Amino acid sequence: MGRPVPHRFVLNLFHLLKRADPSATVTGTKEIVRIADTVFTLSLAPTHRHDTYEGFRLTAISPTAGPLSATVLTFTEHKVTTGTGAARRDLERLDPYNHADLINGVFTDELEKAVTAFTTTFAPHAHV
Image (cartoon, rainbow, N blue to C red; front, side):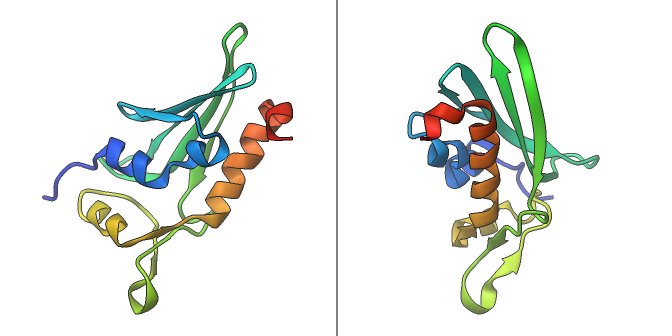
């Protein structure tokens, strides 16, 4: 069996919330940022298989009212690819056998747009 998926490595590689707001930081198994009056967290979204992930779970939390919303952004739905040139391929699942391939490049344009749209929904004035 391959090594466990290193959450911190994956989150630091994608840095999806940091692309929405430069103050985002990776802590443990989550990337976290506060935009206006909303806290956003991003973590790997597990499948039913042990140590296998289908994408990211993105949540919006109000410090005063509690959870506002959560969504799963899948790798397939948002056309995430790894590698370059002839070695470029779609990323469907992240698991102990393929997570090392991420170092060869990750392309996430649609995923970045989805994260920005989600954060804008809950913190619209921060993205003006």
